[in-house]
Length: 111
Image (cartoon, rainbow, N blue to C red; front, top):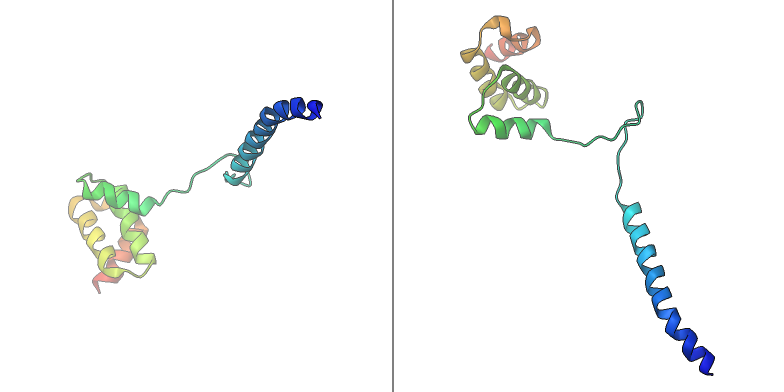
């Protein structure tokens, strides 16, 4: 009977270590990392359009930002926002800096 009392003294730290390892393993497995199927590299999904909108709202301007936002909203059939960004794009930058695809879409919206 005394042997079981001594062995239970050693079982508690052993049990706690086992529980800690088990919880750490479960937590590590629940975190999913996405990999590119071709190059097997990690990647993160970023909503580029929301990021560009935040940047544009802060006052930063570039051809890429306005062009990307205009094309994004055009493809999603939100023509009001698309026209807003295309108007800014064509108002501030020369035609040589703007892609032919954006010029075409802007012409379609102006009709």
